[in-house]
Length: 248
Ligand code: 13P
Image (cartoon, rainbow, N blue to C red; front, side, top):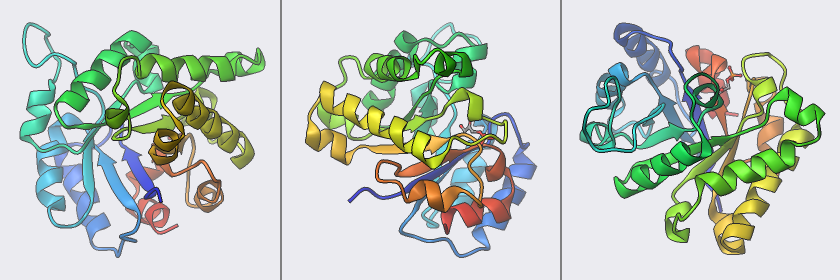
C-alpha cells in the first residue's frame, strides 16, 4: 500500500517570517495523518521550517541541490548542507529548473545519485511541453526523462524516490490535466519503472501529479489508480487551501 504524499512547492515565494506565519497557520489545523504532508520551502526558510514542524509529522524538502559535496560552485547548495538541517526531500529536475537553469536529464541523474548517497529522498520531476504534446511526443519525452533520471540507480534506491509527473502546460496556468490524462501519464511512468527494474519496484514507487492542483480537483485526481499524490505550487501558498489538499 503506497502512502499518499502531498507536497507543496513554494518556489521563490515567502521570506523567512512569511514562511513562519504560513507554517504556524498550517500547524493550527488538524491534518490527516495517513497522508504524508511535505513543504518544499526556499533554502533560507528550511531551518525555521524544520524547527517549527518537529514532532508534527510534516516533512520538509528543498527545491534543488548541487550534486557535489562542496567546492567552487558559487551560489549553490550541497547535500551536506541540506543534511545538517535534516531535510527529508529534495525536488530534482523541476521543469522551471530545466527551462530557466539548463537542467538536463544528465544533471538530474547526477543529483539523484547524490541525494540518495546522502540519505535525502528525491522528488524527481518529469513532464512535457504543450508543443511536445501537440506533436504527440509526450509519452516518448516522459519515458526518456524517467530513464535518464534513473540511469544506474540501484533498484532499492529507486524505491526511496518519488516521481512527479508535471505537464508544463498545466503548471501555474489554471489548466489542469484531466484526471484521465494525468492517470494515463502516471501509469506510463510506472510502466517505465517496471521496464527499468521490475513489477515490485514499480508497485512500490510513489507517483505524484502536479499542475494546477487545487482543493476542487484533488480528490478526483487522487482517486486514480496510479496517482499517489500531488506536487502543488500556487495552492500550497495559502494555509486553508493546503490543509484542504492534505485532508482531501
Ligand atoms: P501550480 O500548482 O502552481 O500549477 O504549480 C505546479 C508545480 O510546478 C509544482 O511543482
